[in-house]
Amino acid sequence: MKTIDELIQDGVEGKRIFVRADLNVPLDGTTITDDGRIRAVAPTIAKLAAAGAKVIVASHLGRPKGAPDAQFSLAPAATRLGEILGKKVSFATDTVGDSAKATVAALANGEVTLLENLRFNAGETSKDDAERGAFADALASLADLYVGDGFGAVHRKHASVFDLPARLPHAAGDLIATEVGVLKKLTEDVARPYVVVLGGAKVSDKLGVIDNLLEKADRILIGGGMSYTFLKAKGHEVGISLLQEDQIPVCLEYLARAEQRGVEFVLPVDVLVSADFPDLKTKAPANPELVASDAIPADKEGLDIGPKTRELYASKLADAGTVFWNGPMGVFEHPDYANGTKAVAQALLNCDGFTVVGGGDSAAAVRILGFDENAFGHISTGGGASLEYLEGKTLPGLAALED
Ligand SMILES: Nc1ncnc2c1ncn2[C@@H]1O[C@H](COP(=O)(O)OP(=O)(O)OP(=O)(O)O)[C@@H](O)[C@H]1O
Ligand SMILES: O=C(O)[C@H](O)COP(=O)(O)O
Image (tube, rainbow, N blue to C red):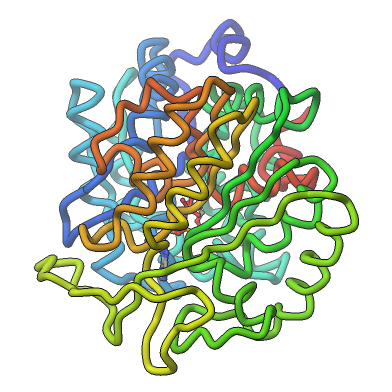
């Protein structure tokens, strides 16, 4: 992959450079609650602008349905990016329409603009090659060069990630270079015990990584929304908890293989449950009930791991040589369900091994809960992306950047 330093050496002054970033940040209304992903890509943008390029930044945010949807606007990210860069970042209210064309045309050398959410266009995520290609053509007409630096989205075969770099001379940004450098180490020789902690809510996206990790890890600890499909597979009632019913046979196979291979596969022994999902806006007390993980009431859902599980997971992490953690242990956005995630973060800090935290929400959780991000070995901006990298899959957004 060409680096941006090599791109700059070739001369970028006055060139329009399309930077595909991942600015998919958590929002509370229009307030960004964690700007980690913006800070992570800002050095690439600053470097290109300093070299005299006209920088066009683009990203997705959330999962809008292929049409404009105000709650997923990237406008707050333009303001925050401007603050981080210390210069004005203009904002186009569309992606390939009149606003984008005018905003790009108005860029002077060294200036930066951010386009509106790429996923407001159905072509961005389309499974149809022609539809994606047509959208990539429209994006390509805005720029002269392409820099891929949205590591969190490189596992998506989307127009701006996969099809666009085929249409423009391209390079990999500094964030992608760093992320790949660290994660590659986890696929090679790791210090043991190698402990993997998986949680979060995107269960179907993430179950697949376990297949590969069963060959590599010594211990796999499961928490968050991921737990309940495993608990159900073991024959327990999970009430109205997050459940991926069709994946139960897969979970059973994983549990059997873990036993055969001598991989410790650890599930929660107790959980905090409630009949209601907590109010994340008011953060009104949720009064959860603590139950054993094989005794979840039929009308309740599991929303965090309990105190015995916290202790158990801390003990399983204490002697780790390497840790990879993706996905919060509970709905950490509410204080009543944040203790599981806090306990795992603290356990990573307490161990002497190399610790990697992956995932937009996991990284945000660590910072929002008050931990020093620099105390971890590496905080990856990729959730699904880092997991699929560890699975050994070919990631469309990385393959597209190769020469
Ligand atoms: N038991 C649970 N039930 C429902 N949601 C949960 C549960 N545990 C955790 N979550 C939610 O999981 C979300 C994070 O999951 P996700 O899989 O998106 O994590 P991530 O990998 O760090 O992020 P990303 O994939 O976006 O990079 C949080 O918003 C949290 O509230
Ligand atoms: O948050 C993420 O993992 C990335 O931004 C990708 O988002 P997606 O899962 O909606 O494609």
